[in-house]
Image (cartoon, rainbow, N blue to C red):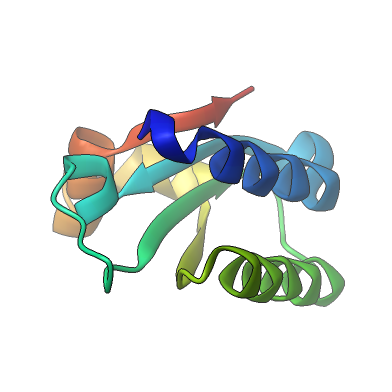
Amino acid sequence: MEDNREMFDKLVKGLRDIYGDMLVSVLLYGSFARGTNTRESDIDIAILVDGRETEEMRNQMVELAVDMDLEYDQVFSVLNIDYKNFLEWADILPFYKNVREEGVVLWAA
């Protein structure tokens, strides 16, 4: 993961610029988090956001992901998760449990 620190730092900076104080945490999950990624693996990112995402924020986030895709020749799959829902359902929903258990914190408020 340290090999990708610059890439992740750039992604986090872009997400912080878009979401500001609403951004609670940025988590890497999936094969990159487990260290089992291959050249064809996508980069799974969960962003925990406290508040309602606007259409403008969503568009900016998609644009950031596409820019990162092109710059690093990787596919970034960025998923916005409502922070309060995540806290409520993290022990129940398998996907949330997986993100919580295997996720690597790239940034947290």
